[in-house]
Structures are given as structure tokens and as C-alpha cells.
Image 1 (cartoon, helix red, strand yellow):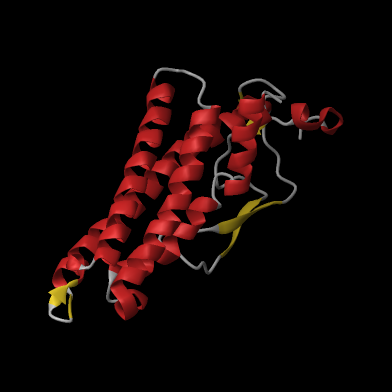
Image 2 (tube, rainbow, N blue to C red; image 1 turned 90 degrees about the vertical axis):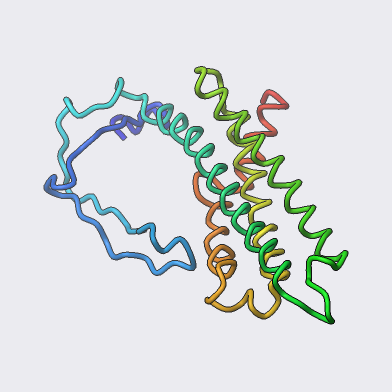
Length: 210
């Protein structure tokens, strides 16, 4: 905050070197999933940053943060589509190879329905993500499109990985199969860059113009 009296309009953005005196990184969190991506606390103590390190104008930090969030949400949506597709691919492979009662799992209607529902949801999420990316590439307003893509893609990714574990049965709960990791990793996508509840608020405010 460069001017606390102005609220969010008093927030400014700065860039600084990680070796700047007063800055340090806390302990690495032990997360449920996404363990390849380190998550740690950042500690700022009596840290001084020169005015030349200001990004944009003074008081524009909040606005810049929102723009970064919009772009980041498209990235999360794309990641969600990839995770969901991975869960589907693993499920298709397993259902063709696994034999029960003299037939492959893929021959059972219950499995076919799960596969078809997963594929349909993934395709819809992919198209929403493409639309948001298309608008951003052309410099258009993306607040609604990014929130919609992120919300839908992350939620269906959770559902698809859950179904993938179910299709794998007991093997879905074993680390020897990829769906176990996907199931742990995917939940973060409904939280990072704004929770699903936040996305619904953004979507509603855009539609209601409030």
C-alpha cells in the first residue's frame, strides 16, 4: 500500500530482486498434490524498494493484479483440460485392457456412459478455453470468458479424475496408476487464481452488470 487512505486505489505494484535486503522465503508447504510446484510463504521485513521499481503508475497495482488474474485463469483452464484429458486417456486404455466376467470393461454400458460424459465435458471445456484465449490474443475484454472457462474446466476436471479413479476400481487408489496422482493434483485448480465460488461471482456480476 503506497497510500492506505485510498483503499484499493492506494495499491501499487513493484518489481524487486529476490536478493533485496528484508525479503526472504519461508518453509516449503507439504501439499496434497501439485508437489512439483513449490509453494512457500514470502516474508517482507523492513524492506525498501526504490521508486524506479514501480510498475505502471502509482495506485494501479490492484488493476494490474486483476488483469494478471484474468490471464492466469485461462492458463488454469488449459491445465484443467489437460488433466481431464489425461484422466480420460488413462480410462480408455485401462477399460480396453481390463477384463471382467470374460469381457473388457469397455464393453459394459456403465463404463461407456462414463467415458462419453467425460469426453463431452472435456470438449466443452476445451472450447471455452479456446474462446478465452482467442479473445485475449486479440486484445479483447476477457474477464467473463476467463472466469467461465476457469470455473467450468476446473470443475469438470475434478469430476473426470474422480470418474477415472472409479473406472480403475481398486487400482485407481494405487500409486502405480496415473489417475491417483491426477486425482490429488486436480483439486488445486478449483482454488488457484480464485476459487470456483469467486468465478461464479465474477460471472454473475458480468451478466447482471453490477
